[in-house]
Image (cartoon, rainbow, N blue to C red; front, side, top):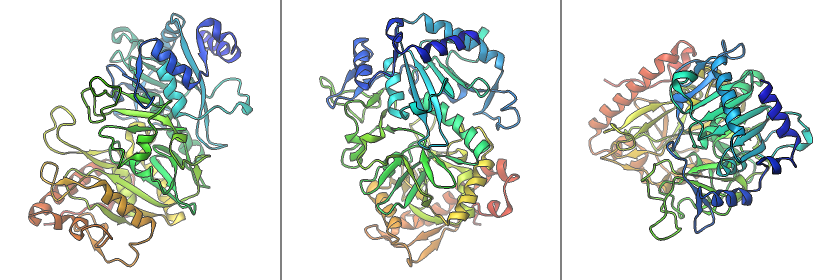
Length: 534
């Protein structure tokens, strides 16, 4: 530990000495871009955004994420395939090897930041990067430090070294890449992967442990915005369901696009930026995101049109998970500070590739709890090797890989707040209608925006609603500007019997997945699940 302590003290003291030791502290975005270009690790797009490649890994590596099992975590963490235990001995060994590796690097980029735009519920973080573009991501995605606190040492430390590879034979981890969290040491170690999202999701995991467990604050994998009257809406959903796109509404202030907390006073953003998917980005449909890709933004794993510096957003030759990070301030009408009151409306977003769920429906509190614990979406054919038809994906609380506590802890907090605040809950299917993937078509983004706007304007009040035969949710039968047969999914299928068979199939998947949680929830929540129709 002395090596770590000494290094932290040096990093805290010597803002001048950084210039002499090769450590660059709190570099500006311009300096980080310049350093990346000088090291030939990136290039500029025609809009001024920095374009880089994250290397072998273009997404998270959840099977290589571990939490140290210690006195803090042993009886509190919900150990599973996402929350994998590792010993303190293994953690300490890799920490010491990484620190020795640090001192061998000709340059390092160090940044003090903050997670949590709230005066009480936040973390101070020091991040150490071996690449300037990784540090640019940190500058974009986290909040500036609060120097008025005069913290002697940060609450947490992240060491991110993509070129440092573990030796599985001796280091106690299964692969060369790893992400290790220690709540006793308050350190996150990331090695062997250049994917920047590992840093933000590491801190999200920390907050998802601390806030509900210690402060009864609900931590959420969601986006949030608010209207001109201050009315707040939150959008839960897994990657690819539309959280970032739908919350970037030109008529509403953006609070944040991915990670939030819900206190007794309202909601607040954990981050200082946005991390948006840009595959097939369209300036007409997503003008706010498109306009944010400028000087200071960081594009990951995109490609240019041949012979130009213009990004080809349809190009998925490297990955479909092309991304951009940028400060929240790059979005017009961004909310500062990034906070709001209690939500009036909650949306669950799902991309249903089976074509079963309606484009919009209203849920009771019990149905909302069931859907929250289920966290359903679907992968489609072609997105992963071996997938030839839609595959149901259930991720508890719409973020299982980042939720170290039992899903029931988060669900209990959510249910309490829904009852207390009288929140409306709506399920939005951004996936397929008129048939499953390969037969039907994906619902138009303009239709989805129209339906969400109708919720904001209370246009569904007094509209006749139909009950879904399997899932029980209430479906509006009319929405201005939307064909009626789109709203009732069985009407948009050519064969209603085929629809009912598909609906039964999906209902069975829900029931089988929920069995693992059934013993830990109230009977009224269990009964809110879908029913099979003979």
